[in-house]
Image (tube, rainbow, N blue to C red; front, side, top):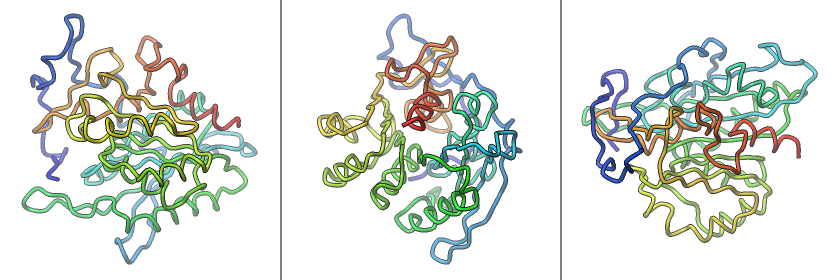
Length: 304
């Protein structure tokens, strides 16, 4: 898929999305997130994982102990998987994949501390605008090796294991869940155009993993009627699963999200709302089943 290079294209904040005609009288369009970005990059350390099959993989790690957490404590590991084209941003991918705010003092305190891993696929933009090298089954083994290494290097401090990602990262979240049944304790596939087979979903569900499946009903790229609607009954039957399928994807200010970089994808960019902890700025949760947002969901799983 041809996707924009965010370093070269400025967001059009005057765009009127096609879906705007469905907004109610009291609803408005919001063109910006309300959290501050690009301020926590320095909390992440950069590493390289050698891999002949995909090329060496750069990845970033936030270590809670290094940043003041109890060195005797136990902390979950959160791996955030970026969407297609986002690795072209380099360090900026920490923001786009959804991870940055979870390294903030506020979110770390809410979770009781957490390790964070952000791997980058070796993507390249071809002359025709298409992306080469985004997440694929070939990445499964090396990404699992990165996860294992972070856990081994911090073995005395590791508790539960989580994986989450949006768009292409949502697909790859499912891929890892399929490939490593029983490895993860929690997962958040977001705005994914891919759905595992029902047999695979049963195996994932039976493994005991807690799922938070998030997908907007006006998603411009992973169309809800094609990607989710045919599977609604099956997804509702999964164990330990919250299906978060809101009518609209919002920003923290309560406005319906628009993100326009050459084409509209505000309703596909559920990851922005997840990075806002699936909470509104006034403290109202996006879903009553998540009264303390994603950080509360993670903390609750860690208590089990």
